[in-house]
Image (cartoon, rainbow, N blue to C red; front, side, top):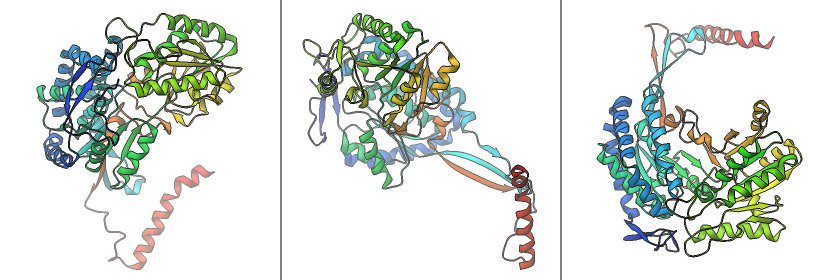
Amino acid sequence: MTATSDVQADNTFTGTGTIKNPATGAVAGTVHWTDPADVPQVAAGLRAAQKEWEARGPKGRAKVLARYAIWLGDHRAEIEDLLIAETGKSAVDAAQEVPLILMITSYYVRTMEKALAPESRPAALPFLSIKKITVHYRPRPVVGIIAPWNYPVANALMDAIGALAAGCAVLLKPSERTPLTAELLLRGWLESGGPDVLALAQGARAVSEAVIDNSDYIQFTGSSATGAKVMERAARRLTPVSLELGGKDPMIVLEDADVELAAHAAVWGAMFNAGQTCVSVERVYVLEQVYDQFVDAVVRDVQKLKVGAGDGNAFGALIDDSQVAVTEGHVQDALDKGARALTGGKRGAGSGSFYEPTVLVDVDHSMQCMTEETFGPTLPIMKVSSAEEAVRLANDSPYGLSAAVFSKDLERAESVAVQLDCGGVNINDVISNLMCTTAPMGGWKTSGIGARFGGPEGLRKYCRIETVVGPRTNIGAGGNYYNNSPRALKRMNTMMTKLALIRPKRVAK
């Protein structure tokens, strides 16, 4: 059973598509696929509307974003019902998305005026202080956002809100597996008084390519392999990109950790949204002193989980059977190589794209479950002899999105954290860096380029930097022009050299 019943081999979508719930097979709704040939016209309309949107300034845009946040809060139940119908999520997982967007929007409404204000910069050297230097943050006209299916609200709006706040227009291409939620989000933007600076392009690869070809900046979230293709396509027009890609996030449990807390965190971090989270806990390294205690606590927690869509369940279905197949393959590979499944180890009974929560032990780095992104409800746990071994194994990966370290000694935990090659580390928690809206979120290595929402960087990334240099006085310009005598030019260059070397000579002593 798939989320889209009309997926074609060449990823071409035409006409109207039927979207089905991967948990039940029930029809969630229909969508009209965008003709790729129409995307340039959509982008042109956004480009025209963006000029007035930019002219409103941060204060004017903040009012619209604030009204949109209120609409999202008022329609949260409707949004979450559609999320469950479209993705097969549990109610508790679906309930996480809107609050995150409200947090991000609230932060930007409060900070965007300051973050986007022109900045005065001092002169590099005193003799250059005759110049006034101002840096302006000018929005790129059209930002193309290509969003994935695992969080149809969060992964679309956490990027769109920042781009809209910066003064850009947004061309959003949601996943072809979850197009319905995006239609509802667009309806909310318009009903809350938003201008025509947010538009959708519905479809798969051909539409994504058209979005890339007609945007001035691309924010992509998805697999590392597809991210490379997006970057290659964008490079044809030198379009800048920000990529949040795959992850294989490690969790390290030191011997002095609160084992109960670590076990609770590992189970939630691995199973949340059926493991379909870029920052899922995908592998755990546990010091041998507490290994048995940790494994027992994890198994106890997992055995209490109830799997199913909607209310009363811990987590729901995977997005479709292709994702179930990936999870099945990783688990079977581990079992064939000597691992043991203490729970689960097979797809759910009955219909729907479910996979049982699976705890794997006796694992090592010869197994796909420890080296490749699973994106399913699995939790492989490996015993290690030292923190140094845990760090080495955690870094033995092409991915570097985020990680977690558990220890009662916070200074030691932070020392371990800064040895990990990734964009964010949580101490005595998992996934919490996503809630830290004052800091950017991004990955290292094949987990991405650039950063997503968070801090002033989350707005400025969508801007072009324009530096304006003006005179502070009516004197000082022209000292190096051709109309000066050779002797005067020589004196000028000699003076500049001496003045520029004052500090290097002082520091070099």
